[in-house]
Length: 293
Image 1 (cartoon, rainbow, N blue to C red):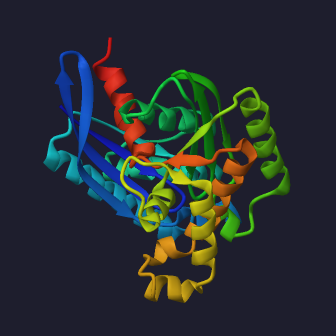
Image 2: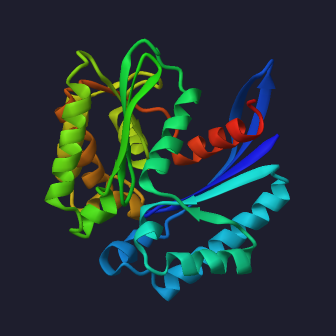
């Protein structure tokens, strides 16, 4: 069984093709192919509430390429989701229609709570102690999804319009930060020890820079040190000296700010960084839809 997930985010668009295995009724998947295209839809959407013709054309071409690849890989089912940039673009529905007509692909604009739920679905593939308390922190270009669970049960989940592209474009609002802080403090105060689970491309890169062993958590102090280290370099030097990709070198700073801020609010001292995200959650959602009765 082979499934595909398309995550149309504010910074990049991703295609994940995964092979699903049935282990006596327990389904797992292995990543076969992952393609990332840095379209930066959020730059248009958050400033103009409109995606430019150039970026809309690039998105349609990308979706057509993804559809062709899915046909070549003979995927059994797929799910394509668009998040905050397409949510805020007034011409989002028009672009969705073009993608259906020109690429023969169904792209769905999902609301923030559904996005948080899909990201939460990815936790089934992570080897964590379910008796502990975890706050999932998923930072994207346009939004941050927070999901708290205890003893393997969902406690609370919410999406906030705070993201890396939004911060770079000065489109984040003080009241949204306050709303997120209130959510964290309200739902975490009853728990003594909470561990973080960070998802998203930026935290994965930060984890690699930390030189921690795979499977081991990264400390809050290490993340703060990385923030100071990266901030000491100019954008140009983060690209040329630290060898960060151009579309990563700028967003990694506000991403670090969001992760460390949420960890401070929740008094989280350690954060696990599994290599999962929205696309993994989509694959898990397809498994639950098609295979789990």
